[in-house]
Figure 1 (cartoon, one colour):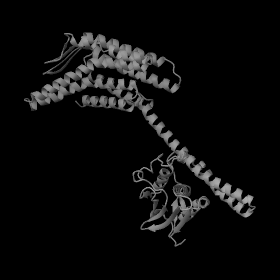
Figure 2 (figure 1 turned 30 degrees about the vertical axis):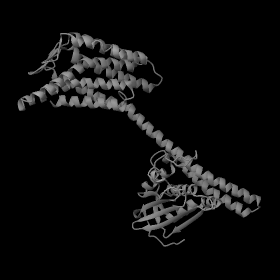
Figure 3 (figure 1 turned 45 degrees about the horizontal axis):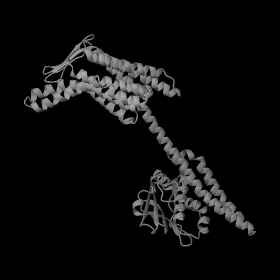
Figure 4 (figure 1 turned 135 degrees about the horizontal axis):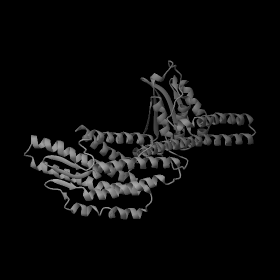
Length: 484
């Protein structure tokens, strides 16, 4: 009992996985139908031997339920006997790649036609008993399955461009063909007649009596199941492993895309600073103001160094963010990030106010945290208007956490967009150089620091507040009072 139920569960779950994991592939769809139909006879056997027998003993008066089960058993048996060979041949036709899609669509209908005369012959009975004589069914099945196996082997021997695809195709073909031949022999060519009535499930065989070689039969079934699991995991069968690998590839490409686009985002900000500092240096040179020109040039080096650090750590952008933590002054990190940004604010006459009520040495990644400060500050710079814009950055302690707060009087964020701004690639900026990656990166970095990042806005043209909270557990030294 347990073995039969286990076979039904395995085949139907496998059919679902093959279909779901690669449902856009026609071959996988046909294979899932093959596997599903293969389990239908065992399902019908379980219903007849266990459920129907149980109900007849416990609730013999439930004639309606017993009639429904009879229809279900008859339908499952019919579906398996006639549609298994059809699904097998169609799957092999699709897999071979030898036929045009128009021809395949025609064959879908043409290959169904033998089912009609077979169903109407006097060798088939459906009610009140279920009885099949396999004389003609075996001819139909043998032609379809053997033709399918020939197509499989021919396809496996055909040269393809890549060795990996060739190998996968060969393994799939040989395994699939061996499985089909075994099912064809044990469930069809070895069967003379099948009868399901009130007395139970009766199978008359030709070569091997399944009841006498039951252990051999189930051993072969187990070998096929274990072989499938092994080859599917190692090489890929029916698209399952290929689907997993494709998902991994898609994930890798997505993270690479995020990483490289974020690097572009960072470089864009830094170039903006360098462009301003370069123009300022040029003006100082023309004005013959050597000291201020040298000061502007000196301001370029931290920008260049920051860009170099980001390039050196691009791998971390294309993978999970990995922190290199060590004790750093939080106020110093903020000031270092702002040092190269202040000249840009001065050019637009935007007021930049800092207010630090305390400072701590925080166990953190200076580079990533500095980039977070720079990103949020540059977002504020782009959001406020020249001459009247203002950004206030506050650093303070609140209960058991350190808080960095950014308040600007810029264009704000529409209420319906506040929840979206942390999503990768989402941006409200119209510039082609805005990738919508800055805030999602900031959020990831702060999360890695076991902190939180929240964005609030009262609406359009009402400014924005960004709050970073870092846990007190990251503090490695007592705070000291500093007022700016």
